[in-house]
Length: 390
Image 1 (cartoon, rainbow, N blue to C red):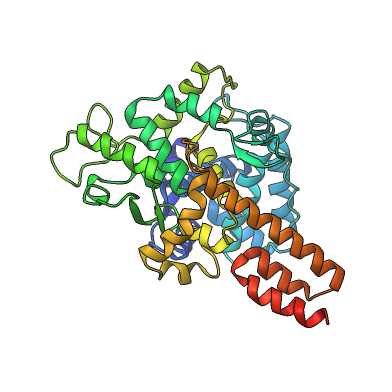
Image 2 (cartoon, helix red, strand yellow; image 1 turned 90 degrees about the vertical axis):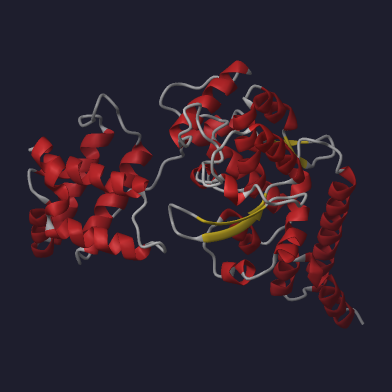
């Protein structure tokens, strides 16, 4: 049944209904390739296991929702006990949970099956946490401060080619997803003459918009890279392969894995690399938190949806650069911005002092959180303290 079904799986009414709803959920009104592939993969796997086509599965679930839940649970159990696997590839607990209780459960929900009472297993601690924990990108300094592990990053970047080093810098200093960095064309950056390249983008996976910067350091390296880049049109890919085609994410992943091995960091096959593209993006977020940026500002830089992101998306380049200047010192490989870092540290000390004062005087807790989120409320807090201490 698998070969025939793999060719006709989109012809079923319930599948078509699910795909339509997935399109509507995306801002671009398209289904990202990775999402489409995951949906296809899990639908095919489950129909083979159940011996029923998608329409039959939904009909059964609408008539007997408990039986549908039980069957899905049995399917999950077969996977995690390794009785079921595909292409000699055994799935992790969390991968199986995402596929079964994310993708497949979503298929039932989109076809009006009430799955609210279905019990999903709790996720397990991902192996990536231990992998990342063994290779920290931030370290505790002798001053008990959190600082970027520049040593390991410098060694990693040094082993990369000019193109791949620039890509790493772009991801690290912008917070943009690797797929969107690799989607850039020459025209997106070539005419910018400022110290920092300003990037306005729309994420290919979600359709969310974002605005961010490449740091001064990244911009310098990117401009040098552009000087040696051969292209026939500004619509050519910014990061092409030697054959002129657009570099793909899986190709970059292999490049990063080889680079980390050259600096002595090993990782097993089929496990995530400690120095993967998503890790660089994670570093950006941690640096932003360390710099005291509000969550909504960070999400604007990273192209993530938030309640207040539209407010920041409407801001000018100059306004957003004011926020970005606070995060840049925590991402540079050049330790020449210590005075700025020290200024931010002093602000942290002042916030902690005021926290203690507030605890002693029992001032409104909401005001505390407001201050921590945005130290610009210092004057407002001082006035509140003055009213309390008379």
